Length: 332
Image (cartoon, rainbow, N blue to C red; front, side, top):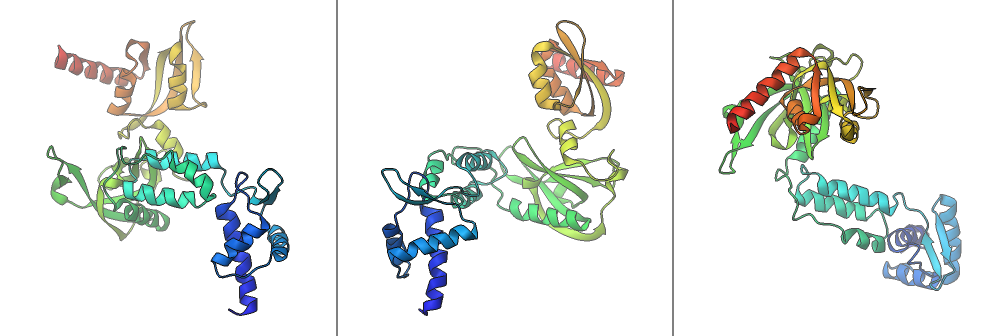
């Protein structure tokens, strides 16, 4: 190997060794770094390591020196701290729409963002096999195509499938093609959804991305979201997700609900800290919010039984009364 090339590779391999194999608890001495470089076919002397480390520090690498029982050099800060990587790993493990295979692949990539010793700490907390996971590997291509379609404002066509009682996949509506204007994708309750519009309706609809198949980006331009939603300048995915209940579609209405005081945390978790709250009496408070009124919303409210009551609008009160009657008839 030419001398100049070896010098260039020496710095690259030294950076690789420090990044992958060192941390505060596992420093490497200059002699140990020389030995590690030799494994890559790079001949180095101990004295040259000091000059190389200085160059890497000038480049911006945070190299620290340990003077404890185990002396040597280590990377002081990685791009991600260990608690941040644990958050990412937990999110991947929890996401049902990510298959077991892809979960393992992603976690392996995350482990490469820290030292090998710290990566072992991450591995001890990984439990994928026992979790409920999506089986559709096509979901990653679906996500990519939908992103493309949204970015160029084109409609997509796809087929949609569900499972029957034998756990077999069945195309919905005899395999008909859905033609949808895609606006956004949102993660809700461990599933990934497409939010879009079907030209036959003047509202928004939602589709589980892991149950979509044969997606094609069409040449048709999307229908403007301003025609089917309250948004005027951009589609606010965060706001829209906050209004929804279990991804049931419905019309947006201004709703007033009375809650017992002990439900304040559940209400703030659901509506966010910006929701309008008024004190009703010593034991109750009211919430006023613009919500997507649907069966999902009614089902959520019924969880609280007699501790939550719809005050307005009247048509929503009637919907709740009808739902309660049907439930009573089922069990009565």
